[in-house]
Image (cartoon, rainbow, N blue to C red; front, side):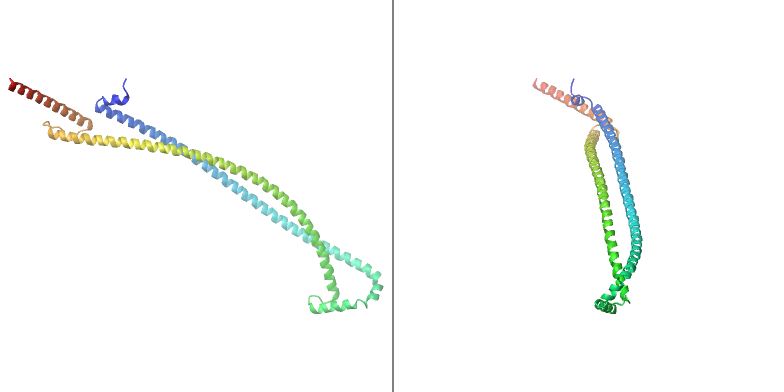
Length: 292
């Protein structure tokens, strides 16, 4: 049993040519198979990438809708709080005014005499308030100025109470927001981990695709080299055939396929070798006769 290359070296050129064609056909079939496998994997990768893009868009749309929902809730809550605050403020103001006036009525009844006693001592305040009225055009009478002061005092108290309630509500809202942000942060971390894993898988698949591409390029190079060698053999065969046709006395056809050309070249070389051997024998005989 001899190696395959040695066997091919000892067969006729036509057999070697057929063997080369068979090998080239097998390489071409393997190349087509690799191309189909690569296209299939590339299609799978594209579908996975499209699925990831759709999921990412769905997640973004969900976040946008949730953000709009929170904004709408905050807006509704703010409007409701402002309306409730205005109503409480108005109610409390009216109640305070009623209480103040009722108290003033009772106090005025009990302190009417005392007011007369201290009236003289308080006249300086009367003069001061009248001076203020002369400077400020908004109020026309001293009672209006005093009433405004009482109203501002009550309003200040109401605002302070409302501020405490708002601070409590804001603290509760901040706690809920912190909890929600923590949950969403965990979800984002999980999604980032998943994206990272998918990226690693994609890089692995890209590496495999690059390896397939490298093997495909190598196969193409081998096929190109075989094609080049085949062309060189055809050109050499055609050149030698034309030289044999010019030197031979036999009228061969000017065009022929490579196998026929190799057959003509083989016959020409065999005939030329036989002529040379015959010439050598005749020369040897002539020399022998001359010697005798």
